[in-house]
Amino acid sequence: MQPSADLIDLRSDTVTRPTSQMRAAIAAAPVGDDQFAEDPTVNLLQERVAALLGKEAALWLPTGTMSNQVALRVLTRPGDEVIASRECHAVWHETGGSAANAGVQITEIGTGGVFTVEEFLAARKPRGHLVYPPTTLVEIENTHNRAGGVIFPQDEAERICAAAREHGVASYMDGARLWNVAMASGLSLPALAAPFDLVGVSLSKGLGAPGGSLLVGSRSLIDQCVRHRRMLGGAMRQVGIFAAAGLYALDHHFERLAQDHANARRIGERLAQSPRILLDLATVQTNILAFGLNPEAPDAAILVAQARERGVLIFAFGPRTVRAVTHLDVSAAQCERAAEILVALAEGR
Ligand SMILES: *Cc1c(COP(=O)(O)O)cnc(C)c1O
Image 1 (cartoon, rainbow, N blue to C red):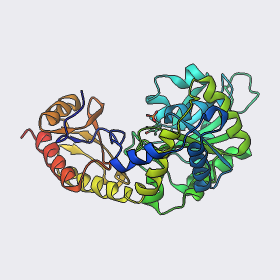
Image 2 (cartoon, helix red, strand yellow; image 1 turned 30 degrees about the horizontal axis):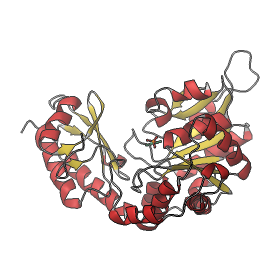
Image 3 (cartoon, rainbow, N blue to C red; image 1 turned 180 degrees about the vertical axis):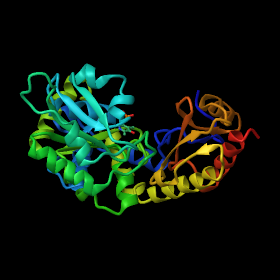
């Protein structure tokens, strides 16, 4: 059932609907068969995103999950080990795809969505060992979803990728929300992408497009991604329809991510005032809030149901943890109202 318009929907930044201007851009887009590389709008988007991130080439894929899965298949072999941040998307939110599609095992390390080069090196297993699975890929998630939209420290990412390269380990960044990182940190997209062999970015999160994700990297890696996209059934035809929305989003919805960050901050500051809500404001760096409930507050599932009755939609991450995400379809005033409602419910009012 579609939530009614007066609901304040903070479940995810994927709930946004295309604006009328975005729909106009979609309607006007020249399209062609993308499997013949003949969709001019897709080609334009791929060139633009490759240039934006300072890499040779980019490939459009229908979802960020498929980008992650294709990256695993290109950068690993079945039986390999991947080292990633704890509670990463590939482990928690892809229904076991990493094991089913790439046949890899993922070792989660670090805390709060980040890890250090020392933790990476301590977990890395060499190739050719009698019993260890070889570590062939390190993956970071930036921003980290389940840790509350936190930014991976760039100097640490650089050290990790340099150490990885030294040991013949490939590197991948799940940058579904890399746009938010650039906006919040002031670092350039090419600087953020530079340490990594492959980077995934999404158009359907804060940028507000109805779908689409891109893998970005060297020409030779992207050429390999084309085959795996097809193998997973993600090679489509006139997807200029989606790419047009992506181009529109890059032009019109990138700068405004700062508003989402300010709105998340607004909600966070109100929630943190309540003794019933466990939120470290230091984790509120972009557009996501992940918070816990103290023992006197209701369970997450109850809070979610009660909030819905009062017109606020949020998402239960666990029995006692909740996520709220700001985006272009919620205003500052709505975020303030939502925060008041969440605090009242946590406090049993
Ligand atoms: C949303 C998300 C993805 C991709 O999700 P899709 O819904 O498949 O587009 C990948 N990684 C992270 C960290 C995400 O938050």
